[in-house]
Length: 72
Image (cartoon, rainbow, N blue to C red):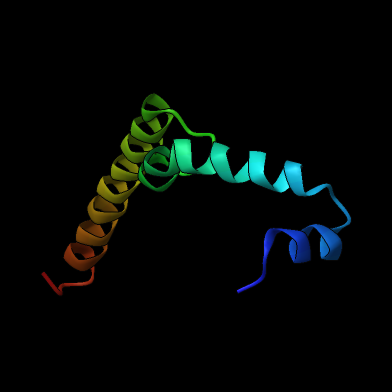
């Protein structure tokens, strides 16, 4: 594992900047892993609802194809 100074040197930023980024991440770690970066719970729910709608539509199409092909 690298030190803050090693990282700062490698990425050509000031060590203080890395420390600030680290504090920001630690303050939002739960939010980042639950909702993904930059997504609000409402955005997550909207995407999820759209995906469930798509799954339902595809299931209906599959059922119809099975029925017309005599498989179901």
